[in-house]
Image: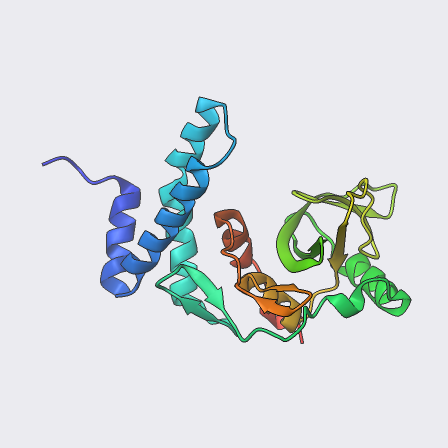
Length: 216
């Protein structure tokens, strides 16, 4: 009999300790494999690296979702966070509000560091959602931050990237409602709530680094 790989052993050990972890891992594997199959990755070596690290990342995500106490629940059948969805996007009232921009500036001036998880409000053609991103660059000579996916922002959260037509992007000061909506994939349009989106594995892993005690 061939020896089990370390990642396989870890997942089997988790399954013995937490009965729902196998179902959760299956949901995460299925979703991420579909995402990779439909991605635009053309470099075989990059695809190979992503596949080789899949077991490790899914084990870590599943272990956190099953084991760590958070204010929101886990849907083990779909591999997602779930929380009650507000009638309107909780970040909408922060957009273009000078008082809120000032509060955001004060917040990010105190809480910015490399690796910090941030919430990005996205409005595309009237379709709203909040994404999880992370800070990966902080210049010492300027009051701006760089998010890994969404690029450069002022400390007040306003985007420094070239605006796309019919698209609004802003880094928003987090609170419990905003972070819960981001983790749960909540979406809205002009008519109100729509079907939540499934977080990417990257966003799901970012959600495991959130310090919920920071938010009200």
